[in-house]
Amino acid sequence: MNPIAAMLTKIRNAQRAGHKEVKISTSKVKLAIAKILEREGFVEAVSLQKENERDVIKIDLKYRRVSNTEKSPFIQGIKQVSKSGQRIYVKKEDIKKVKSGFGIGIISTSKGLMTNDESRKAGLGGEYVCEVW
Image (cartoon, rainbow, N blue to C red; front, side):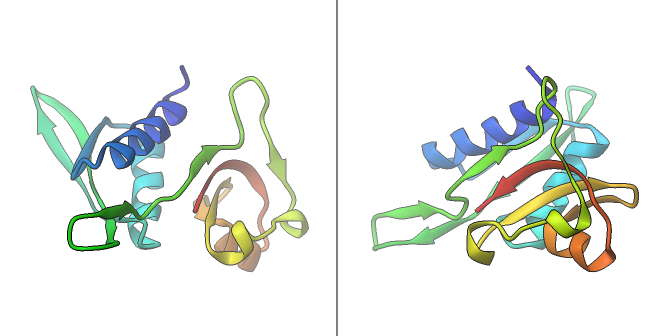
C-alpha cells in the first residue's frame, strides 16, 4: 500500500473509532500533509516524537460536541486523489474548490505541498495529492 494512502486511512479510521490521537511513521511528505491539516484546523496538533528509537508523527485529532455524550469527527471525509497507479495533475486554472469551499485539496507543487487556495493564488499547478472536508 502506498504510504500516503496508509496515512489517510489511519486518520480516517482513528476518527471513526473516536481516538484522541494517531501515530504514523515519519516522512517529509506525511509531515507536510499533517502540518497543513493542523494549519487549516482539521486536527488539533501535530508533533514529532521518538518511539522505540524511531521517529513518529503524532496527530491529536479534533472533534465537535454534538451533545453532552456524543462527539462528531471534525474530518468528515478524507480521500486520496492521485494514486501510484494513476497520477492526477492539475493546471493552475483547473484547480477547483473542495465541497464549495468547506474542504481543502492538497497539491504537490514545485514550491512544496500547499492547499488548493494557496496553489491557485501562487499560480502553480501540480500533483493533486488528496482532499479533506
